[in-house]
Length: 209
Image 1 (tube, helix red, strand yellow):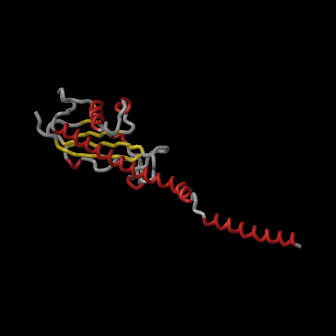
Image 2 (cartoon, one colour):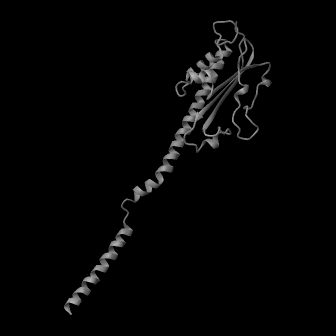
Protein backbone atom coordinates (compact mmCIF):
# COMPACT_ATOMS: atom_id res chain seq x y z
CA UNK A 1 0.00 0.00 0.00
CA UNK A 2 2.82 2.37 0.80
CA UNK A 3 4.45 1.62 -2.54
CA UNK A 4 1.29 2.48 -4.43
CA UNK A 5 0.91 5.64 -2.44
CA UNK A 6 4.46 6.62 -3.27
CA UNK A 7 3.89 5.87 -6.98
CA UNK A 8 0.75 7.97 -6.99
CA UNK A 9 2.60 10.76 -5.23
CA UNK A 10 5.45 10.68 -7.77
CA UNK A 11 2.99 10.64 -10.68
CA UNK A 12 1.13 13.62 -9.31
CA UNK A 13 4.37 15.61 -9.08
CA UNK A 14 5.44 14.81 -12.67
CA UNK A 15 2.25 16.15 -14.22
CA UNK A 16 2.60 19.70 -12.91
CA UNK A 17 6.28 19.82 -13.93
CA UNK A 18 5.47 18.87 -17.54
CA UNK A 19 2.64 21.37 -17.86
CA UNK A 20 4.83 24.06 -16.32
CA UNK A 21 7.53 23.39 -18.93
CA UNK A 22 5.08 23.87 -21.79
CA UNK A 23 3.81 27.06 -20.25
CA UNK A 24 7.36 28.39 -20.02
CA UNK A 25 7.99 27.45 -23.65
CA UNK A 26 4.86 29.26 -24.79
CA UNK A 27 5.86 32.36 -22.86
CA UNK A 28 9.51 32.30 -23.96
CA UNK A 29 10.60 35.11 -26.30
CA UNK A 30 14.17 33.86 -26.77
CA UNK A 31 15.12 34.14 -30.47
CA UNK A 32 11.92 35.96 -31.47
CA UNK A 33 13.84 39.03 -32.62
CA UNK A 34 16.11 36.90 -34.80
CA UNK A 35 13.14 35.15 -36.40
CA UNK A 36 11.32 38.43 -37.02
CA UNK A 37 14.45 39.94 -38.53
CA UNK A 38 14.88 36.95 -40.84
CA UNK A 39 11.29 37.38 -42.06
CA UNK A 40 11.54 41.14 -42.60
CA UNK A 41 15.18 41.46 -43.73
CA UNK A 42 14.67 40.67 -47.42
CA UNK A 43 11.85 43.19 -48.12
CA UNK A 44 13.51 45.75 -45.85
CA UNK A 45 16.83 45.67 -47.66
CA UNK A 46 15.10 45.59 -51.06
CA UNK A 47 13.30 48.83 -50.19
CA UNK A 48 16.52 50.43 -48.90
CA UNK A 49 18.39 49.38 -52.04
CA UNK A 50 15.57 50.66 -54.26
CA UNK A 51 15.73 54.06 -52.50
CA UNK A 52 19.50 54.26 -52.97
CA UNK A 53 19.24 53.15 -56.59
CA UNK A 54 16.57 55.75 -57.31
CA UNK A 55 18.79 58.41 -55.76
CA UNK A 56 21.69 57.27 -57.97
CA UNK A 57 19.47 57.33 -61.09
CA UNK A 58 18.32 60.90 -60.41
CA UNK A 59 21.91 61.95 -59.72
CA UNK A 60 22.95 60.47 -63.07
CA UNK A 61 20.05 62.32 -64.70
CA UNK A 62 21.36 65.61 -63.33
CA UNK A 63 24.84 64.73 -64.58
CA UNK A 64 23.54 64.09 -68.11
CA UNK A 65 21.57 67.35 -67.99
CA UNK A 66 24.71 69.27 -67.01
CA UNK A 67 26.63 67.63 -69.85
CA UNK A 68 23.92 68.64 -72.34
CA UNK A 69 24.07 72.23 -71.14
CA UNK A 70 27.87 72.27 -71.27
CA UNK A 71 28.12 70.86 -74.79
CA UNK A 72 25.30 73.13 -75.98
CA UNK A 73 27.24 76.12 -74.70
CA UNK A 74 30.31 74.91 -76.61
CA UNK A 75 28.24 74.69 -79.79
CA UNK A 76 26.51 78.03 -79.18
CA UNK A 77 29.78 79.92 -78.75
CA UNK A 78 31.61 78.21 -81.61
CA UNK A 79 34.09 76.32 -79.45
CA UNK A 80 32.72 73.19 -81.10
CA UNK A 81 31.73 73.38 -84.77
CA UNK A 82 30.80 70.91 -87.43
CA UNK A 83 31.81 70.77 -91.09
CA UNK A 84 33.04 74.36 -91.25
CA UNK A 85 36.65 73.57 -92.14
CA UNK A 86 37.96 74.83 -88.81
CA UNK A 87 40.18 73.38 -86.10
CA UNK A 88 37.14 73.42 -83.81
CA UNK A 89 35.26 70.98 -86.04
CA UNK A 90 34.29 67.71 -84.37
CA UNK A 91 32.91 64.58 -85.94
CA UNK A 92 29.98 62.70 -84.41
CA UNK A 93 32.37 60.29 -82.70
CA UNK A 94 34.54 63.11 -81.34
CA UNK A 95 31.44 64.91 -80.07
CA UNK A 96 30.25 61.74 -78.33
CA UNK A 97 33.69 61.38 -76.75
CA UNK A 98 33.50 64.96 -75.46
CA UNK A 99 30.05 64.22 -74.01
CA UNK A 100 31.30 61.01 -72.38
CA UNK A 101 34.17 62.94 -70.81
CA UNK A 102 31.58 65.20 -69.13
CA UNK A 103 29.70 62.29 -67.55
CA UNK A 104 32.68 60.06 -66.78
CA UNK A 105 32.33 60.62 -63.02
CA UNK A 106 29.35 58.22 -62.96
CA UNK A 107 28.87 56.87 -66.49
CA UNK A 108 31.62 55.12 -68.40
CA UNK A 109 31.56 54.94 -72.20
CA UNK A 110 33.54 52.17 -73.83
CA UNK A 111 35.12 52.59 -77.26
CA UNK A 112 32.36 50.40 -78.66
CA UNK A 113 29.67 52.55 -77.03
CA UNK A 114 31.19 55.70 -78.49
CA UNK A 115 31.35 54.22 -81.97
CA UNK A 116 28.02 52.34 -81.89
CA UNK A 117 25.46 53.64 -79.38
CA UNK A 118 23.57 51.10 -77.33
CA UNK A 119 23.00 53.00 -74.07
CA UNK A 120 23.88 56.64 -74.78
CA UNK A 121 22.14 58.36 -77.69
CA UNK A 122 22.78 61.95 -78.79
CA UNK A 123 20.61 63.89 -81.19
CA UNK A 124 22.08 67.17 -82.44
CA UNK A 125 20.32 68.95 -85.28
CA UNK A 126 19.70 72.41 -86.73
CA UNK A 127 16.31 73.92 -87.60
CA UNK A 128 15.05 76.95 -89.46
CA UNK A 129 12.88 78.08 -86.54
CA UNK A 130 12.26 77.08 -82.94
CA UNK A 131 8.74 75.83 -83.65
CA UNK A 132 10.20 73.07 -85.83
CA UNK A 133 12.04 71.50 -82.90
CA UNK A 134 10.36 68.22 -81.85
CA UNK A 135 8.79 68.18 -78.41
CA UNK A 136 8.12 64.45 -78.05
CA UNK A 137 10.33 61.39 -77.64
CA UNK A 138 10.39 59.25 -80.79
CA UNK A 139 8.97 55.78 -80.09
CA UNK A 140 9.13 52.49 -81.95
CA UNK A 141 5.32 52.35 -81.90
CA UNK A 142 2.28 54.27 -80.73
CA UNK A 143 1.85 52.07 -77.66
CA UNK A 144 1.68 53.92 -74.34
CA UNK A 145 4.95 52.47 -73.02
CA UNK A 146 6.85 51.86 -76.27
CA UNK A 147 10.64 51.99 -76.29
CA UNK A 148 12.56 54.87 -77.88
CA UNK A 149 13.35 54.86 -81.60
CA UNK A 150 16.86 56.25 -82.21
CA UNK A 151 16.72 55.81 -86.00
CA UNK A 152 15.97 59.52 -86.55
CA UNK A 153 18.80 60.77 -84.32
CA UNK A 154 21.62 62.59 -86.03
CA UNK A 155 24.60 64.89 -85.66
CA UNK A 156 24.26 68.03 -87.76
CA UNK A 157 24.67 71.22 -85.69
CA UNK A 158 24.55 74.49 -87.59
CA UNK A 159 26.96 77.38 -87.80
CA UNK A 160 26.73 80.99 -86.57
CA UNK A 161 23.23 82.27 -85.70
CA UNK A 162 21.65 78.88 -86.47
CA UNK A 163 18.90 77.37 -84.32
CA UNK A 164 19.89 74.03 -82.81
CA UNK A 165 18.70 71.29 -80.52
CA UNK A 166 20.76 68.89 -78.44
CA UNK A 167 19.08 65.91 -76.83
CA UNK A 168 20.66 63.09 -74.84
CA UNK A 169 19.13 59.74 -73.93
CA UNK A 170 20.79 57.29 -71.59
CA UNK A 171 19.60 53.85 -70.54
CA UNK A 172 20.44 53.72 -66.84
CA UNK A 173 20.44 50.08 -65.74
CA UNK A 174 18.12 49.30 -62.84
CA UNK A 175 18.73 46.28 -60.59
CA UNK A 176 15.90 46.65 -58.09
CA UNK A 177 13.02 47.18 -60.48
CA UNK A 178 10.50 48.44 -57.91
CA UNK A 179 10.33 52.19 -58.49
CA UNK A 180 11.11 52.46 -62.23
CA UNK A 181 7.54 51.76 -63.44
CA UNK A 182 6.41 54.82 -61.47
CA UNK A 183 9.07 57.27 -62.69
CA UNK A 184 9.22 56.53 -66.43
CA UNK A 185 6.71 55.90 -69.20
CA UNK A 186 9.19 53.92 -71.29
CA UNK A 187 9.31 50.16 -70.97
CA UNK A 188 12.57 48.43 -71.88
CA UNK A 189 12.96 45.59 -74.31
CA UNK A 190 12.39 42.04 -73.15
CA UNK A 191 15.01 40.86 -70.70
CA UNK A 192 16.32 44.32 -69.77
CA UNK A 193 15.44 46.88 -67.14
CA UNK A 194 16.48 50.51 -67.24
CA UNK A 195 15.45 54.05 -66.34
CA UNK A 196 15.53 56.27 -69.43
CA UNK A 197 17.37 59.52 -68.72
CA UNK A 198 16.36 62.34 -71.08
CA UNK A 199 17.90 65.80 -71.27
CA UNK A 200 17.09 68.43 -73.92
CA UNK A 201 18.10 71.99 -74.71
CA UNK A 202 17.34 74.32 -77.62
CA UNK A 203 19.42 77.36 -78.45
CA UNK A 204 20.52 79.80 -81.13
CA UNK A 205 24.20 80.01 -81.87
CA UNK A 206 26.01 83.27 -81.37
CA UNK A 207 27.23 85.17 -84.41
CA UNK A 208 30.75 84.00 -83.83
CA UNK A 209 33.42 84.76 -86.45
